Length: 308
Image (cartoon, rainbow, N blue to C red; front, side, top):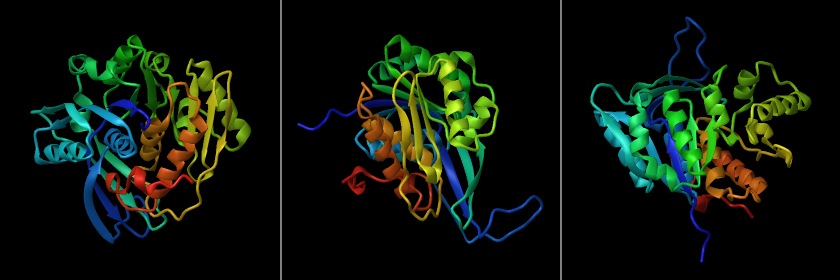
């Protein structure tokens, strides 16, 4: 028999992404021509859910869309990856979230987000979905939904003994103490870590010092994604170390971090005994994502990831 699928519930964002390709990112006041424009499914929450589902996770989604064609289409996309969507509410009074992604020839991007329905998830909505949370191995959240929805989800998860994973993106200088205290695993990138601790990270010693500061806040496990430099992980009073990234030519980094988080969670054992291997798997998945354009369209399936 194969390994039991991880049950993962994601409280998160669902966006319609509009990607605009340009030779370079525009400067303030500058007008430039685009090379290509296309739309695709996005949102950090939806991206992470799809990454987990395509790599062996049994995924539930809690979120909200507007009563518009975009919302209906995005929920259908999640369903195509066999993600349970009964936790997604359709709201009458607002639009589905959207993002405008500008990608240059080096694969760098800048993103503007309109939260829309993602910012209107109520505590009552979360409480209605407590059975999805209770049955999970992991609950994952990001900062593209309103903070109260994250706090309520994590409160229920901790009451039920479910491991909580927080991706603090987009970065916030101040994370509510209640959310910090309810977080088991924090997965920031280097910039997000700098924002949380309030200081620049220019070398390994400063990275380790910053991670220790996160541990002092009460978070047991910190995993910092470092782009082409790989991933640094640290378990409080336990193992720590770097897991290198694969060297590839990036053409679009959109959803790379989301791919890492979703695939990592799908592979991580509850006792953390395979954390190094789960990180390496996430790195491999993200290395494929950055070689493709778009968000959800670039996320690889398990069959594409060769870990030999």
